[in-house]
Image (tube, rainbow, N blue to C red):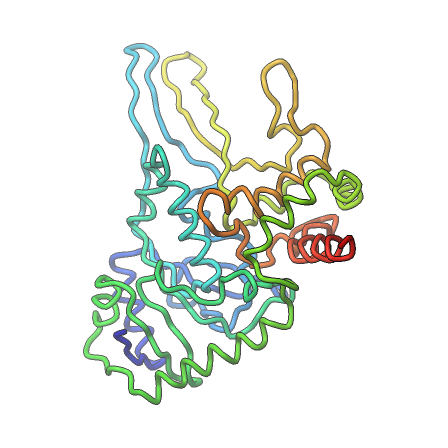
Amino acid sequence: MIAYTIYLPQIKGLLRKWSQEFEIHVPTRAEGDFFEFRPWTQEVEIAWDYDLAYTTLKKFFLPPKEDILCFNMKDYSANPVINAPRQLLLGVHPYDIKAVNQLDQLMDMDSPDVNYRARRDNTLIFGLEPANVADTAFWSSMGAARVDFGFDLYWTRISPGAFFVQVGSAKGEEMIKLDGPIEKSSVAQKEAARRAHLKILAQAEKRTLKYDWNRVPDQVNKFFSNRTFWMERAKTCLSCGSCNLVCPTCYCFDIQEEADDLLKQGKRYRQWDGCMLTGFAEIAGGHNFRASAWERYRHRYMRKGKYIFDKLGELGCVGCGRCVRACTARIANPREVYNDIWEAIKNEI
């Protein structure tokens, strides 16, 4: 593993160099205790100790609304629309990198999504070891406390003025040397990074699943037919879809087309959709495969706990805790749902 040590005064110079080639987005304090990724400028203060970005980083690869095709109805021609800015995300926590790694697999599967792939290929990810844990997070028990790939650099703060920076790609190493010579990390600095990881891990493990995440698919599948459980859980659901929109691994979208007033030109676009929304499973003729809120609620937890696992061998939840914060009815909490299922099954035995 190649690693360098970067000191705080060096970072502004690097940011200026990087900004000549990339749009840079960094974690910043938004309002109150909330944080958000925003474009970097000289005046922006980076929130190195943020606990959780309120919205998901998938918006950088799969925008909430995106044109994908333009067409001419006079000459029957059509052209793809691919907008893929060169962008650099600085300060991405490991659970969010794991979510991006999962999206990479899903969007490249079968017929690859060319718009997603173009954005992904034009994006550098600089990871950051968390310094705080959100009070809704449980990522340490979802196999998302550490990632071995999916980043170009991975930063760990080892003192108030220094970062241990692990190299994840050749481009990452090139970027970190752009503003002049830097020193290779010492054994002591590597040890400091290891201790920083163990410290935040201890903080994260105060809220966990009560069992190994590998057992979630089997547990949730056993509870699929327990209508009473799902109906009771979902009885206050407003079907607002907030949990879908903030989830870093939800990737469903709806495609629509519109034409100008003269019916000469038009465009096809896609926008985020969500399985918790009433019309998500509605088809022609008005039939809805999941008309009830409890059916949609159950589907969401099956999707996160089993269906994605069946595809990739990993859960569709990384434990970031965004859905817990965003849920207007306070019922979206994967850790509580999976733990309650575990307890119920254990008591049946």
